[in-house]
Amino acid sequence: MKETHTDKEHLEMDLENQSMIERVFEGTLWNTRFFVLFAVIFSMIGGVLLFIVASADVIGVAKLVFNVYINHMHPENFHEDLVSNLIGAVDLYLIAIVLFLFGFGLYELFISQIDIAKRSPASKVLEIHSLDELKDKLAKVIIMVLMVGFFKRAMNTTYGNATDMLALALSILFIALAFYFMHKGGNSHE
Image 1 (cartoon, rainbow, N blue to C red):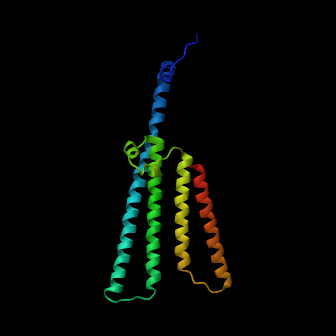
Image 2: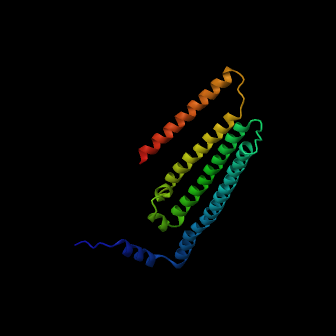
């Protein structure tokens, strides 16, 4: 009859066969993963700061609207400025989300699972199981940031001739196709 060993027994046998130098080196090497905490902490700080700045921008828009409708101070290009500032805030919120996803993903991949997140229904959004999954989630949000940035620039651009309008139409078509394929690719993995 063949003797079988559990994973724990194999690990204990391997540890017994290691030299002291090898154990110390591997322990030190393994613990260097905690340097990832710097990226996690500063990503979270950056995300919080971007949320604060974007929220301040929205409050600034609210003040502008208040002045227009209560004090009857209607500046030139009011609607363009209003939409442009709101799009800028959305852009900052999306970049903050990129930083949060990055921080959560690094923590879960290199340090530990976030136990409290498992009890939350929103945990699926932040659950990261591999580096490829983290890259996919980050890429999707970054593409959204680029789309919002394009939309903001397209609003502030003047179009002088038919070629400009054709370029705008083609750009919108390519963005729509990119969004379609991004969404289609996301459904195939789930």
